[in-house]
Length: 321
Image 1 (cartoon, one colour):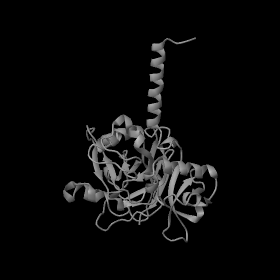
Image 2 (cartoon, one colour):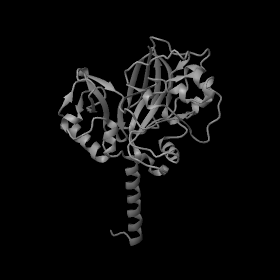
Image 3 (cartoon, helix red, strand yellow):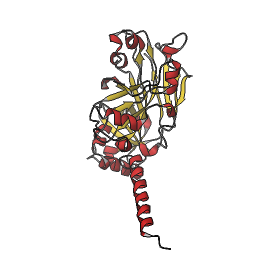
Image 4 (cartoon, helix red, strand yellow):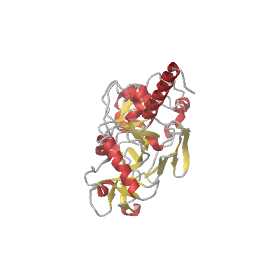
């Protein structure tokens, strides 16, 4: 049966629209991967990029597979599809596999140009402090030097007596852009990871004119990892269980569906003000259960162990020292 010409045109238009939407949902390369950065034990400070064979499994050393590839994930993202397609080939090869027992896992992004943070971005977190739902994103930042590894220590600074936890979904920019349209925004995302927006509440609410920067940016106040999970490996980043445990006790438990401003909206908003570049990290806000709003308030102390978990992404575990 032959369709009328008008019906054929409509059909082709619908197919084209679907392909466009699918392209926007896909990552840069259309490949589902878990990218990590690591050091081989005994090799000094030689940072390497790895592609995990699965969560917690061995990983393929990308530079060993192709010596022309860079040594950091940020540089890999700057290559665009070329870099990620090479990582996909490395994973498929099954060669140059490194045993996890012989490595130190680093944060999946080192020295990004920007660490963009979003405050008050979970409905249930607003409710726990009787705060109104924001009408536009509340943006602040951390210095990149706050980033530390997924299993590194959190250092309690002597300047603060009120250090708190905040589990957060983070995403990493993979494609440069300015004034990005919301409908195009997801094509600029390389992947997702787990973050802990460690916060000194005394400096957040009582010091520094109540500007948030200093409270959020002490050294080690941004544990990140364990992997950068590419967008194609995450079914729906806005329907993930998100939890924080302190010494094994669950203190935060929610779902990323509670986010007020989701990934695409945040990219569109922030890119009005600044150019986003590959490797930029976004922390998207925290659910309820932080220590400062407990009765009485609870803060981290030396010896505590904080674990942040997000479904499909993994967990980071950091001891407080």
